[in-house]
Length: 78
Image 1 (cartoon, one colour):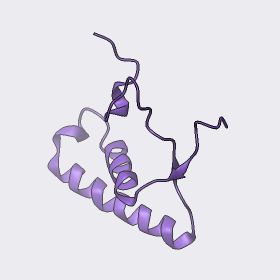
Image 2 (tube, one colour):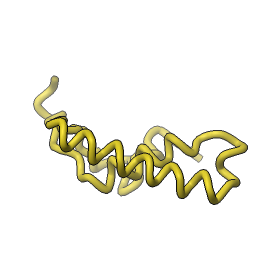
Image 3 (cartoon, one colour):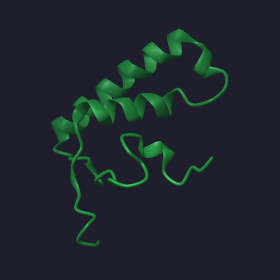
Image 4 (cartoon, one colour):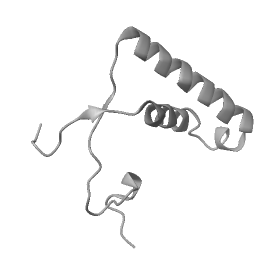
């Protein structure tokens, strides 16, 4: 690991959001509100179980240049 890629513990809300988005991925599930609610409940329970088990989710820092506040836009050019 490089010095500029120091990992830090991820915020609980960020992990829940990432899991929720991953669980609702797909053309059919994106349109269903029930799928969104269910995926959020599942994500919250997964995070709670990870915390109980002693797991720590780490994340890389968001680069200051190029991505701004949106890491999904890295490398995207118009």
